[in-house]
Length: 236
Image 1 (cartoon, rainbow, N blue to C red):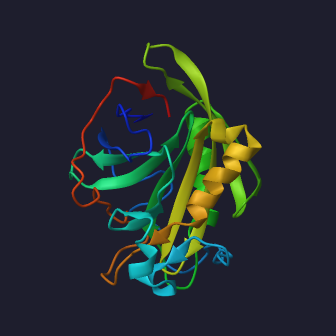
Image 2: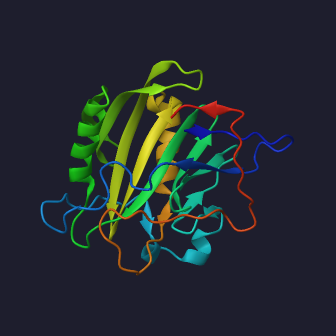
Image 3: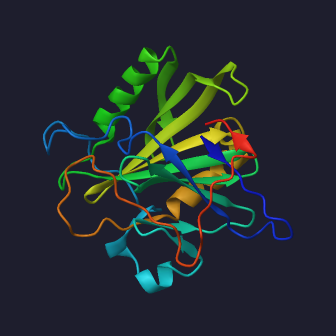
């Protein structure tokens, strides 16, 4: 689920919410991933997103929201929601919403010499079919993407079909997965705006050992008290 929190009197202020989810392991990334063998090549990231080693972090934090594992470009009217693993209490993904469009970002550790996206695409496709949905591969802004239509339960209890577009970028020892939702799936101009947000993201994996597929943990911005507000849910 992703949602917007409207704050009266300041539409440009970034509001942060926390919601819970059952697991911190995104589909297609987790325990049991292979190492360097049989994986996809690294992505072309000449236009971003960037690794922490490729930027001046002090400069990069200017105009970006610091979530620990990710630096997110701030946009007027953008609402930010962190999704939290209810088992560990760790924030595992960030949803950036502008009006009726959004992108969900999840960063995971990856092997040093190869990427995870090739295998992850197959797992996403298989999962969609198990859930009674459809999945097809198509060219995307970062290389091959998966276009999904999945049956989900709406807040009123009815089952609806939810479209999404899933891209991923393989960086040095990480993969950043971007799931485009809402109007970002069918409006070219809106989609491009969110693609630019993804490109402006900086991934901070750190140097600690991590197994391929382990989620890079996020945290609320300093000084921002995260709160859950289910009054205006939007299905995702």
